[in-house]
Image 1 (tube, rainbow, N blue to C red):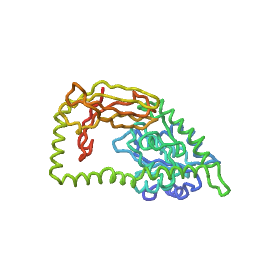
Image 2: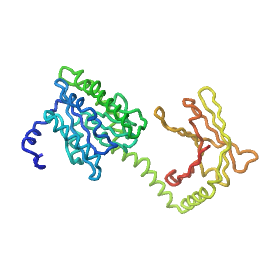
Image 3: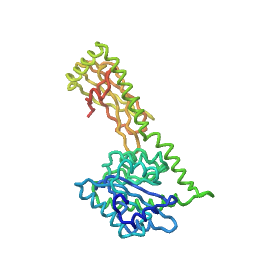
Image 4: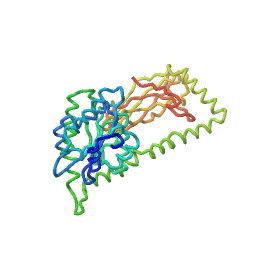
Length: 368
């Protein structure tokens, strides 16, 4: 603070700010409207009571900055500084760090017990700051958006939202602010301060940290990302590149791409048939390939993912040629009846053993 020419008394207070034995919450981000960095300020009195509780104290570290042209973002920062000025008794429990950067982030993620992230869904691109907290033993309380929408489970942290999009609905913002306060008051703070053993260890909290670190850190890390790039992209690409040193392979790929471009608009489906028996759906469909080689495409049965299920794809198997048709075949597939048959849709995609699809051919034809 001295480097920013803060008053001497403010510098002295900063020396004794924060208590390592107190539950420490934090968030850091660019201050802008969709990130809702002031959701915790929706009820200033309630926030004050959280921070000043005599028996279950909480301290909050905020770091961030706004774009010079973002008036709304700068106004949000002013609201936090005004709250600080109005409550000088919170100086030891509420710290605002301006000009958030990587060096600040490095320190924050090592010292935060609970990382809070409150973006307005679906605007969160990822939310990597919450991932960095994992390996440092912090827990997440975040909107079900970005990475947390994929990672969240009740035993790993806490979640806001219903996975739906509500635009800039002020009423929904108020509901989520209420949910945030309630989670802190009824779940987060009691878990940190209750269930302590004879040595003062918060057993319930530590159990949650262990679960979060063991399950999420290996999955949401740069190591895992790099391994995925190597195994799913770089190594297959190197094998394909080696194969293409053979002129005949390169020429075959060029012919395939030319055939796909020339005949794709001539592809079409016949009538889909579905028969459900017990635990199995039987799908069948005629496919008309124009003058395209049947080996140049793949017919698949696809179902979108949703909140309860992941997306799935099953290959449809080419059967006999259709009588009375030219270059046309019956394709079939049996799938488990765990999902409704209407969830599944046939589609045609290009395929070539020496190519990566859809990287090298993005065409796709859906049954309608």
